[in-house]
Image 1: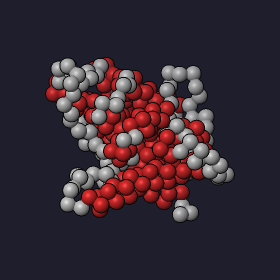
Image 2 (image 1 turned 180 degrees about the vertical axis):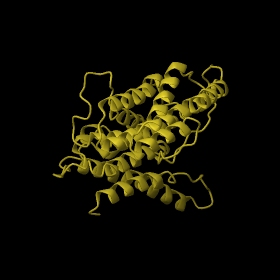
Image 3 (image 1 turned 30 degrees about the horizontal axis):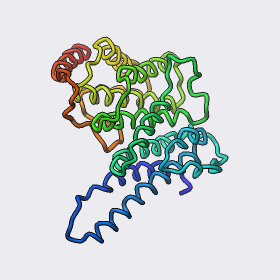
Image 4 (image 1 turned 180 degrees about the horizontal axis):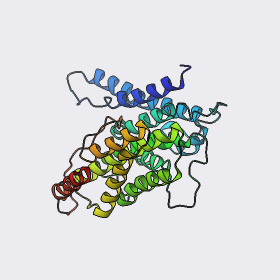
Length: 299
């Protein structure tokens, strides 16, 4: 397609599509057919990943360094794919859609046995969300805002999946605070461009989804001060004269904190799991506290 937005939508669709691959139970009735189907579906998963990553590199050359770490795509398969193009700041969802497709593919990759690639995709998504506390310059690379938008929306469901299959070894407090710190920094910078309005919306939506997922699993106790800071930021966003996109993101972030999953454009979703980590389930207390605080906040 000539349209960048269509490319992004197709990437998102491919991510959804590959979630249905490699799901059939083994059947002894026709072993040859089963083997052929399995072979074709494994090939399809690899083709989806190659298509999504290749499209990302073409639209956003700065992503090439990170995506080369995915072994399933081949070490040298993305060499020379970079194209000359104008910045996609006017249509940031093109790249964001491809990033979402990449995040949605982790379920199929896990079924394929590509566990290292699942972990690597998680790490890539985290790396595309700037750490405000570091000394690095925010969004110093062309289209890095679009990569951040897609990562903010895709990461919560990827974190949930990795937690469920015991592939997670990250500081959840640090991840959550990365979202909230970035939102605060954007508010302080007072950037009025549409691309930053989209980014702030994506940050709010993703942060709400991440918080809800952590509380749902009940294996990690969130600090109340961090949650309060996030909800205070959301209240500030949708009660002050910001553009409609920012207001929408603030409200979606609030309802997502309660598990709505609104606007995150992912198909993985948070699910409860039986963890062997010996922690008391904290989700009922955390949710009750969150509900009380949110009720007071709305008054």
